[in-house]
Length: 287
Image (cartoon, rainbow, N blue to C red; front, top):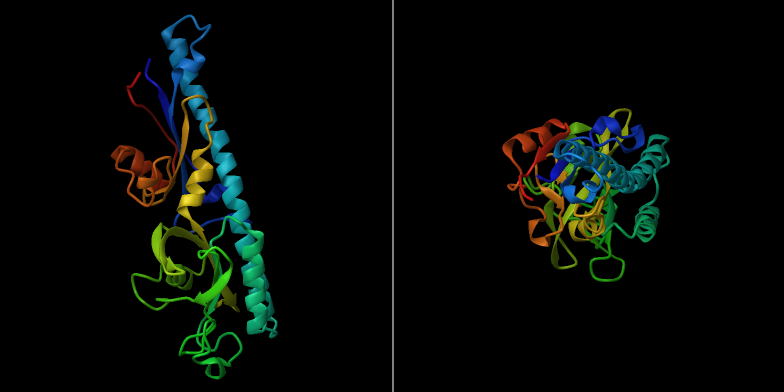
């Protein structure tokens, strides 16, 4: 009997408006669902085959719902944070820089799954006072722009300046919301936090005033922690949960060495379905 496997996609359209993701849709893969758990009491291999397939698909849907709920709650927190900042700025009463510190730190304290939180503003787009804050570390650099990055990478919550925010190729977490004007969940990347490289993904939303981009607010999720939580799921005996980005890169995998790596263990057809945001089912021929 061949184990049935199923790839189920969390498409952007399946999210509520408050958790809809752009740029990189999140995809869920539940694979290697053992058929042996459903063959007992069945009279024919055809029945067992069909039952295994149905169980794999149902397990994928349930696991996708669990993962979607977790990521949705995380992204909702980011959107609420960005909405608050955006609304205050739009009404002509932007938060003070100290208040921005307080809000980003509070969000980090409330969300143990985040490793860092931030808001970053275009030149003089916050309060027109960048010149007054030039060189005042750690929340500012020589430009005076507010670039505080609150994080817990060192074990306790601390702040350091965001870096490379205008460096092409290294600033997707800022450039993508600035270009697209939409929220995004980014492809995995490495960012140095508290002196160590962290493989992470970012949930980020643009800050818009009258349709004009004035900044961005976001939170970072370390892939190691996300993968540990999701990999512990076993939808059915012998099943496992893996999370893929739209680009076919592992966001969560039971093997930590696969995190941030291309899913080259999946077929080209499966990866095409991932890019298209469509469900896919296959049998691996093992067992």
